[in-house]
Length: 372
Image (cartoon, rainbow, N blue to C red; front, top):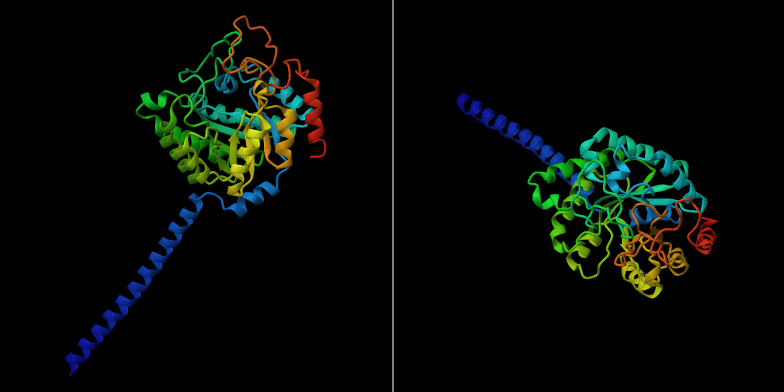
C-alpha cells in the first residue's frame, strides 16, 4: 500500500509539473504570437483611415521638384564640394514668396556611400533652410530616368540645349553589373529612414521615381519590392509612396498602388486627360499628390492644371523651380544645339535672377495660394 501511495504521489507531481510547463509554454507561444502580430502590423501599409487623417492634418500642398540652379544632377546637389546652401537659401526664399510650401527633392546613394555622415548633415542643413521658408520636403530615393552611368566627384557640364543632359539614375546600371549592391542599397535606405523617421519637416518618402522607365519595365520590380520591404522595416512616421506614371506598366502599377500609403502620380497632359487620371485614382480613397506636372508644350499648364488640383484637394508639385544647369526649360525631345532660349519653356517657373518666366503664371500661383 505504501508503495502504491508513493507511486500515486509521483504521478500526481508529474502531472502538476507537466501542466505548469505546458502553461509556461502556452504563455511563451502567446507572447511570440503577439510579437509576430506586431511585426506584421508594422510592415503593412497604412489603413485608409490613417492615410486620410494624415491628409487632413496638412495644408494644400503645392510646390516644385527642386534642384538648385547650380546643380546638374543629384550628386552635384549633395556632394560636399558642390553643396550650395547659398543658392538653396535664395531659391527657396523665392518659392516661399510666390506661395509654394513643398519641394520634392532627389537623393542619391553614391553621395551617401562616399560620405555617410556628411551626407546626412547636408540633408539636415537643407531641411533647416526649407523649414525656415515654411517649405515641407518630399524626398525621393531611387530613379530610373535619364543617364544610367555615373561616378562620384566632378559632374559633367551641361550639354547646350539638351534637357536633363546630366541627370542620373539611381542605382542605374550598377544594379545589374554589381554583385553586392543590394546590401549597400538596403543599408542606405535604412540609415536615412532611421535618421529622419520622426522628422516632421519631411512629409512623404517617395521611394522610387518612375520605376520601369528607360526601357527597364518589369526589370525594376524586384528593386521596387525590396525598397518597400526595407522602408516598412523601419516604419517611419511619414507615409511611403511610389507614383504611377505609365498606364502600360500594369504589373508595376498594381504593386505601387497596393503598397503606397498615399497615392501619387505623374501627368504631363492637358486638363481632360489629367481629370481622367484623377477619376481613375479616386477609387483608392486615399490622399493624392501629383508629384510631376506642367509641360507647357503639352498643354499641361498652371492655368488649367493647378486649379483642377486645388479643386480636388490634390497636392500640386510641378517640375522645376529655377532654370539652371539641368536644362529642363528645353523639351525632352527637342534639343537646341546652340543653347539659345527656347521660344516656349518646357518646365521651370523662374529665371536664374528670380524673375518669372511668365508673370501671369506667378500671379495665378499667388492667387491660388494666398489663403492656404
